[in-house]
Length: 278
Image (cartoon, rainbow, N blue to C red; front, side, top):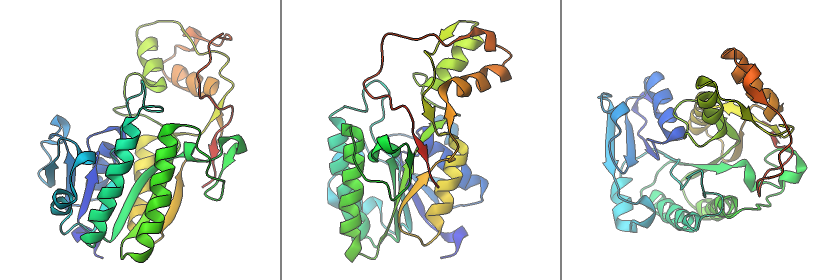
């Protein structure tokens, strides 16, 4: 498969991770990229090499419609999912995304798409294991991660007898450009820019934080090779929330605005330690 002629379709290509995958592909001189989404985003309108296909709701489209959209596609990178920071971990919309993803896989197989690249999550694993490899037991605790894990398990069996190669990217903690304002990284930056004091609790939880640009590059590299199955999209480097915040504040010379005092409230899902093994 000649890379410059490879036809790549990306769902969710206007979102936080998806848009970065598109940008990195353009940087690598791929010139046959199609974005499947609700509308054409302003920040990509000037890119003449991009093509666009539209869907009001990808996850409720019928098989006939999906097959038309996937005609002549070599690689499908399926990033789209419901990810509203307010409720995505528990929202019933995850069920719609799961069903829609299975239908998308059926369409991909029918159209002889060579590679189906799915985006999973580190939360699919038994997070009590702390260091998580692709061999770690699957044991999701949330509806979001349960639906992602279900998609992977279902598609791995479905594509087993298909010509389509399944690749599954389990993403860890991403941050960076165009991140939703309700998430930790932009909250810290916004408050510091406004010279507001921010209390992050003790900040002892250990995470595997990765710049979304680096994650996009890793996903693209994995998408282009001939390996199948799951892959962790991570740094493998543990860092506390406290040190993550301090690194941001020091670059802005505002570390004096950070507080790390114990809070009474704790989120429903807040593991002490999650780090990936590449």
